Image 1 (cartoon, rainbow, N blue to C red):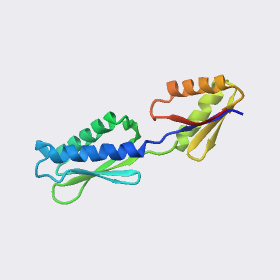
Image 2 (cartoon, helix red, strand yellow):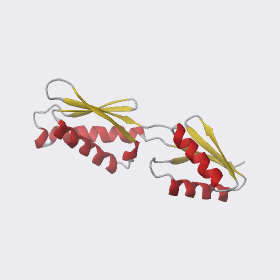
Image 3 (cartoon, helix red, strand yellow):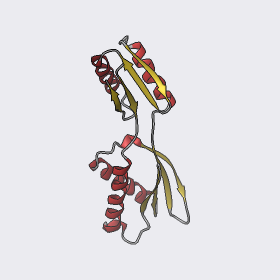
Image 4 (cartoon, rainbow, N blue to C red):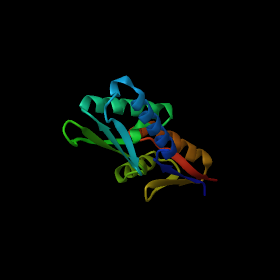
Length: 161
């Protein structure tokens, strides 16, 4: 029976490249001269450091522009609150979302069931598997999800015929 998985995960190689490019631009820009502004990366978490809130916003803009150039969707980023470190220095933790969360998975299953298509959707951990008898039904399910789910970037992989 043909099936595919609906997943939501960023290309971490491209994220790492974007971070390296952002750090390189921050180190060479005149308005960051003499400041301790940078982006650090650990697993699924980025930490933005800056001297004040204005420079933190500038670091965020540089990071977003570098991610856009590398075709990484910025909707993967989940910004935490800004924390004071020492003196005037601030930091912000940004998590990189991975996997389809429970509420979104339920929304996807509900969309598929409400559409009256001849496909079945089931939650498989952090992805949603959609299976059906015909390949055309699966392609129309993909089109439906692309149109209706706009708050999170979705990928379709593991297509089996």
